[in-house]
Length: 191
Figure 1 (tube, one colour):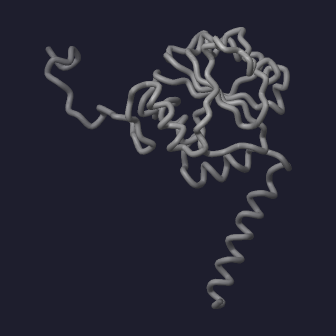
Figure 2 (tube, helix red, strand yellow):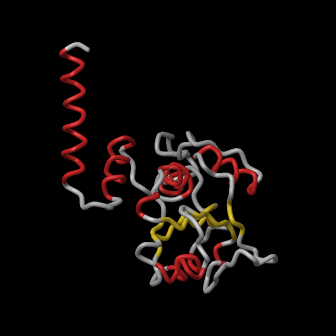
Figure 3 (cartoon, rainbow, N blue to C red):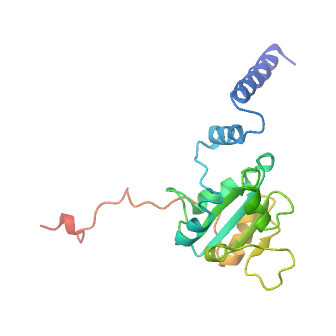
């Protein structure tokens, strides 16, 4: 290995170590920080807790919701990449699917209501079905569906696409009209 390669390798390790040193052990902040450096984008998944859980699902205009129960040590960027398509100001497909999650380390009682057996665990249903609700593995007639085949962003989005009969892609972008010239029919421009 040349000296230049060794130097670049050393600089890379020092950069990661310096970033990690400013965070507490077990902190998800470092994962978000690294994710933000990589993609320079905000994490748009809605963080839920016992206080806001019901109200978020009651107030959303979304037709469906994906709810992730996780532990801080099981954070994956899979959910992040799909959430940015449906949540946030730059969402390509806003208002269709609410992407929300619960940190079970901080909300154990809420996670117990849904019989969380592993992390992460994802559920799908119309949002109002989560309100005041719970889930158990032996519920045959529950409208809350456990999502199984989602271990990559592509698989998660494919699963959602199947439910919605759609063909959204991870590269979808928000369609903006900012670059178009105003129409003569716009009231502000008619004298």
